[in-house]
Image 1 (tube, one colour):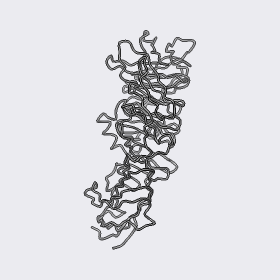
Image 2 (cartoon, rainbow, N blue to C red; image 1 turned 135 degrees about the vertical axis):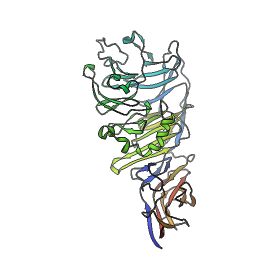
Image 3 (cartoon, rainbow, N blue to C red; image 1 turned 45 degrees about the horizontal axis):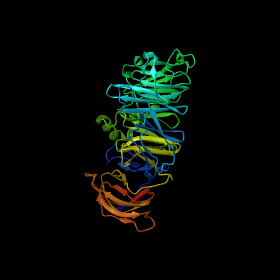
Image 4 (tube, helix red, strand yellow; image 1 turned 90 degrees about the vertical axis):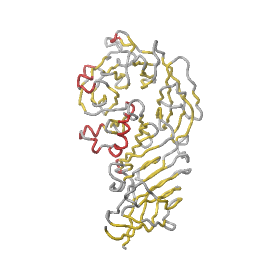
Length: 477
């Protein structure tokens, strides 16, 4: 038998389920849970979500702005807030009640000059409503009835909001001015988005995309050049893809927009370049994981929430009890997905300066990394699983004589060598730190392919940098 060393020395492609576990390339993983890929292509344990307070669920929406968290509820009596150890202020915002309607869902809150435009929905009517600085707005264009809309964005001195087939906007300098005839704050009006494309009748979201506004329905995205003077507004491009989840749409990097579509997580920049981004887009590696969630309904609507973590620029998309995390570092050629299991369902994300907060459906407030930014937990398990690799000889039987792991922290190491059952792994060793300076880990496995499954659940940080297998090759089948 001849011997050789087979090494896994970087994991820069992260979670990727597009190919079979027997043919997936090195650098990809089948499971990467409660960890991320760092700038060097190594696996790194995530920080803990530390409970720092409580915001009553009667506050239907939470966001970050300035140096504070902001919570929104409809009514006259503020629901309870328990700041706990939250290191920043939590501000309560009460919205005027709607006569004859109960607001079931606050959909969005957009800051403008330290005040907020808020949109909400009453399911029993059904209708949507708009508040600015807590005051319910009326629309003079619609005969003075309550203004309606789903989502707002501040852009070039005006407040824009989507409302069904329309993109509506305020006068310059004052979001509460909706009258196109105003001379004090001119520029209010609306655009009928639907007349540009038959699939654009119900708009769902919008986001600034470089020098354009991307207005998104489920099946189309329209790119608009918008100006304080509505006479200069112009449609630039119509793309045949849209979003299924309004709060999955966020600015990413230096101007790109990421969003969840029927086909998975897509990049607006990639779409405008090659118009076939679903083949090689930033989210392609996890399409097989994400698509069933969309089709089953859990990845659709107002539930999924996305943010960009400011410290490392990672895109986080929460769907039910799982957070899908994109680590994107172009200088290192790293585009890597992983998943977090925070132990709760995210109701709201909020970013305040360089801190990431999450609120669960019960009102508990969490701070990622804790108040010291470096808190790790032992109440969650880090799980890493590789494909079954053939070491460039897919039809040659091999014996794993031993292996070494370059890592920090405590890990259980399991190996699998049965290609007909890639879910079966056998415990090889429990290790604490790099094994290179001590005796190699022996193993008696035999087969054409070898896969690894590692788990970590202990206090403190943990990393995996490389895996080395000492192989003895036998005969070719």
